[in-house]
Length: 510
Ligand code: 6LW
Image (cartoon, rainbow, N blue to C red; front, side, top):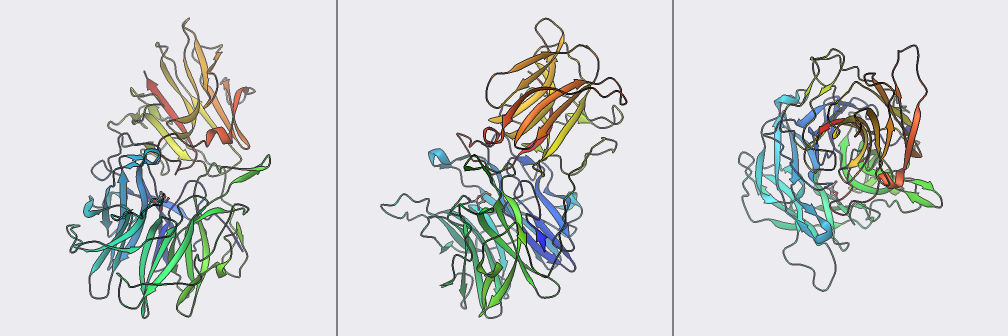
């Protein structure tokens, strides 16, 4: 028996490879930097973040995208000693106006996946699109697949017309070696997240169809001819279907791996909404990484026996693992712990871990948290529904617009913050800025003491603070307000909520 998701917190579009005894997995990172988190496991159950494929401005430039822009659907592949991470970076994503600039996809590569600095600079493809996949055929030809709108639109239908296009490429340059071929489109209007494989006599094409929301599902086709088809579509499609009454929803976007004993496994994305007040409430985690077993029957894949993806998988293999909720950062190392993210690519180095021992010193930049740029903001993924995020802050300011504090972050259009600033009369105060409703200010007694800021995460987010006296003399928290999870997870008017909740630290001088 084991518990899903295997990687809790915002971790969509998982892609996996096994090298020897080790599994490596990458997930999408959108507007966050560094991009393309790489996880490692030896048993598919316990995953450790070991680094990122996109850590340098020369690899990743995200300046002012809409929520949900940036890096989409990374694919991880391993070929002859080299790891390849494929991605596309959306600089403009405005689906509400059917306005997107299709990015040129790219790959970065390394022979040492444990060293984040070793990933190459990007090699850009000729072919645009998202959800890039690479497939090496036995004759040495390398095929790139990506999804973009088909050029001949479906007439008289209000479909997205997103289809999978495939082209042989020169891997050194990224150049296309032929014209792209449309290899899969879907009656739903969306065929994406493609992965091509070869096994025995057949080529297999896996596609995510129906869009990443409630219609999301996974299809498979096979061909004896080659990676451009013609394709035979499995009669068992979709390979399973989770619906609106299930504990796990929106499942799809699968990738496969065979373990050392010959058992196949599938990783995919899913969400865990909460049933509250007679309706489903959006999951604060967004889309997370799930695992299910896979078998082959008559040369067709059967994923999870064709059954719905569960939160608890009861099979003979694997084991149950409780992800630890406790985590702490004393900022006592010379570099930041893995798992801190910036929103967008930082332009300047605006922090120090050495200037004041045991502290993260922020040099607050000119952008407040509502600006779609890169503020001085350090974020971590929320991984547990019920947890408390506590921050001790040492801050005074002469200016009444300068603020430092802590935040629950969905995107630059929806966040709730609690921070310290100076009031109009010159004394220090705490400001609570909820995602919805009025800003509230609370006077502080001391002009100098450290302030402990607290966010309780659960069925809502509750915010409070106290003035730090001494470690022995812990004060009671003064609660200042609450924001519901449904307010915190609201859909943005531009872009999309493809990510999950983050908790963070910030400073700005406005
Ligand atoms: C992903 C695509 C999708 O690239 O969501 O709606 C995108 N479908 O497969 C972002 O994860």
